[in-house]
Length: 409
Image (cartoon, rainbow, N blue to C red; front, top):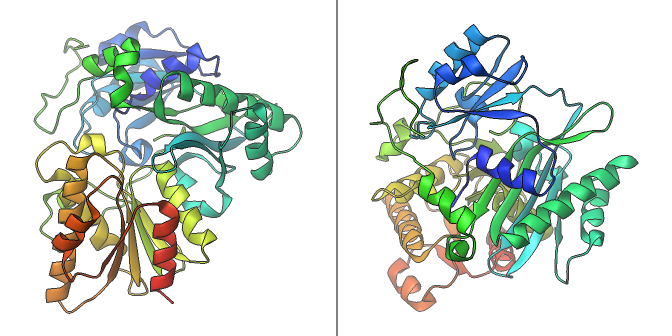
């Protein structure tokens, strides 16, 4: 379960992770009683990433502009989700923006710390700067400090950022989370650190131990394009960075996926021959790092985002199919590494997408190898289902990366 930004920041506040003064906005009229001094930033509260590029983040200087901007954002769907709430937050002038995350490796069953000196909307384009530290023993401040040193931080930033990582890890463990992400962590010219955006993914199986998170799950409302749009007088019913929004790039391949016209995927192009399709920034970064560690060169990658939003029949299958079409456009791609982790029902849709995609390509006389990482499956049954299709199964990330590199040699 992905929490919304304002919910994640409520948890940050409990852990004394520094956040900006903010106010929840349930409808545009609430801005007439805004308690935060202008200028402020208005942020759409949806689960999707890339809110800035989609127009879901706007800077405003006064009440009139704020009300107009809120009206626009409330009526703006981002990946088919309309916001039920906006977050009004003080504007912050950051001199640097970092990326930090603590995530769970579902196979090794251990936490991993991630960090990059390039955060914000451009984090996915800075793979070479992403550092990781696996927590393979009892956690201590050593792990956080090691990450900051690998990131190349110096002086007082080593201590201040290490402290943030320690608090993120504590939150991760205390709440049984799958992911805690700060992107970006803003650094002011005076060295002050500030969590400008945050993402928290709760473990659905652990919600029984955390009534506060379970309550957030019950209260969270999300709906599709059929949602009634808000007006200024409508009653309240209940990206990640502070960079200026840019237009989202669109991909419209000649495929039958109904999502190709309603959602966009972002392709990050590199210069290798291994394409990568993942879900989540943390898993994407770890996969790229694993391929590079094995001596491979990624050609590009696409992050399809959280699997929680794909509840409709065939929605995830269509999304994966669209991602496969996108990464395979580059003729230098020799193998596609698909590393999408989810429940058994999600795994079924992933297998169906890969099977349908390869069968379609075979009919078009284009043959491409796929390495598919799946966990907790009946490998023999999956292999029988795949038949003679050019797919290698892998159960660990290292195994998948090694198979991908071997396939292009």
